Amino acid sequence: MTVRKRRGTRLGVGERRTFVAGVGMLAWLVGLLWIFPVAWTVFTSFKTEQDAAAQTLHQGLTLARYSDVSHSTTGTLSLQTAFTNSLVVVIVSTVIVMLLALPAAYALAIRPIHKWRDVLFFFISTKFLPVVASIFPIYVYAEKWNLIGTRTVLIILYIAINLPLAVWMTRSFFMEVPRELIEAAEIDGTSLLNQLRSVILPIAAPGIAATALLCVIFAWNEYFYALQLNFASGSTMPQWVTSNVSTRGNFLAKLSAASIIACLPVVLAGWATQKRMIRGLSMGALK
Amino acid sequence: MLPALLYVVAITQLPFLVSIYYSLTNLKDKTQSLTPEPTKFVGFQNYRQIFSDPFFREAMWTSVKMTVLAVLLSLIIGTAFALLLDRKFFGQGIIRTLLITPFLLMPVVAALIWKQQMFSSLFGVLNKALNFLGLNSIAFISDHPLASIVTVLVWQWTPFMMLIILAGLQSQPSDILEAANVDGASGVGIFRQLTLPHLRPYLELGALLGSIFIVQAFDAIDVMTGGGPGSTNVPYFVYQESIGGGFRYGSASAYAIVVVIFSIVIATFALRLLSSLFKDEERG
Image (cartoon, rainbow over all chains, first blue to last red; front, side, top):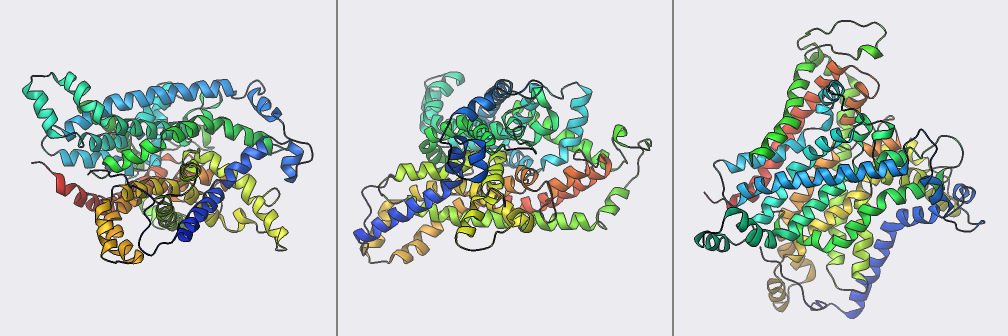
């Protein structure tokens, strides 16, 4: 499927300038409406707790909540620990996912093996198994092998949840590589590894990046396994955020600051790569 | 390919098999039980019990409503957003950036934002706005738990749908659209006759991926209602039966197995749909 860029403003027959301006206004309205809860949270995170609770702004804006949440009381999950845990778990699991997914996708896309379709369906179908269906055995065995509360158990599980999607998506990106290029490389006697490196990867790279980013998003934001299998000191950012919800006293501004810190890395990564994601999805998600 | 396959089998399928075995026993967490009894094989007793459990039936129904509503709404709104963004206007990139942000947020954070800042009857922006307009406050989460959760899910998943549909729109050959324009086709006509058929596989893909993730929604429910009445979907129900407080691993496994069978039936339909997409490009 070729991706063709649209040119110009696409003023159709009967479409007036005012109509185009109207579309722009509508888009702005919708965009601002959609982002409002996030913007409001950012706003709240700079307030004092009194102002946050009353939704007023008498005491000005301050960065104090950010320093509050980064210096937590001893004995609870600290920002530094949670951040390091998240970072390690996300990076290690994503790297392993891609290392496993690329050869699998290559096999499925470029050298179709017998019954490749069944294999592909199997990969996707594992996504339909609710996590709750396998959580007890996982829990029981994690406990048996002393993995509860470790990063290892999360890495193992995040690989499993992201692998099917990664295989599926990278396969579609490999399909984009023109067969002639691969055949030409084969005739020239290029080794498989060199073929991958010099022919296939450069073409499929944007798609692979989009896939890896999706894996990062899902792993960074994962809450269920982190909650079940990791307590306090071993856990990740989503749990650190919820640890800032206290039942007593004012906490809204603090919670907002914690939310912003927790989401910022992935949001920034997503913003930076959004065009690639769209391209990646159009390139191959359907192939 | 083998390593990936083996890995997926080991981590997803083996525990599932163990679950099947558990479902035939009366396994419980001994430390949580006042009267420990030895684990024994009870056959299909757990399964018989399922079909007489009104709470499970309710959870199934909630699951269906939650998934269908959230997927449909986010698809429709996502398509509308994609159509808007597919046109050139001032600040297009900024708006796209703003719109995709909710998808990048942690589901836990999204749920907290809505619970504490928007819906809350004490601090909530929505109720402040209602009061400002002279209307009475609404206890959104306690009175309308399902609608509240669906709102958050739709808010997060609309951007994802938008990205997929946008990808579809951008892959539409522009010469055909121009030709239709020259022939004097109306905007609505072009959309219905050309754009919509072209978008169909993208809509199907969005619905499929959306359902896979939304049917397993856990975070939003846990944060917003803790599984209060009317908001417990099947995953949350199974969670409550087992590690979430019930600790009846045996019967909880049976519930989980029923859910899996149920999902596979639905998935088969969804995958058949997908296979029609694969058909065109099979290479012997």
